[in-house]
Image 1 (cartoon, rainbow, N blue to C red):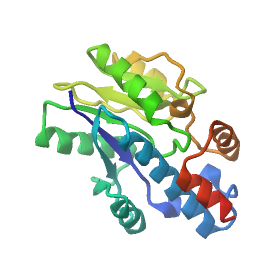
Image 2 (image 1 turned 180 degrees about the horizontal axis):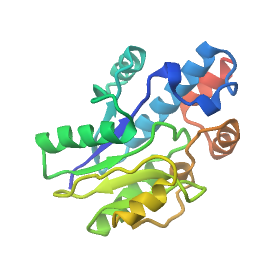
Image 3 (image 1 turned 135 degrees about the vertical axis):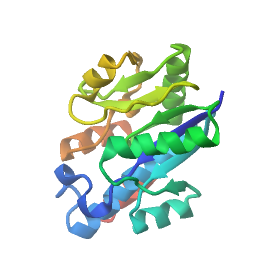
Length: 208
């Protein structure tokens, strides 16, 4: 079965506001935010079961950097927030191939390992329906997957784990520390560093 993943990336000017100061000046913050996304996408693209990773973004700097990495991007439409962007991306992918499973990842998983994402995706597919993985606080969502024939129905945001559970999505269990470690704050970044950061995030922090 083919699996296509969507990764929404906010414009750098207003992304990751709670992480400001962790990398220093404004330019360093932008480099760090971009690095988080590039590491997330690179890890996801290396998963054997994943056919493609598509970024949803309208930031020219981000799109140019991802193009250099060979990543396809689609514009953030209707530019109304995370869930509308994911619904749009889901529709684009389904229109191209309705036989594929579609998933979504946040763009802030710098310690993600392809092997653990592969295990999580296979566990999600085994449920036969929509499934999700919580973050390490068990309140957020770091992976949402819908099988062929079912819409993604994203409910990302505050308490998204409960929101996805309420829609009937199955909660996944497993030891996937990198997948569960999204980075919103400097404390999160410290935890991700302990797990082992990807090359882009490591390089961005070394430039500080």
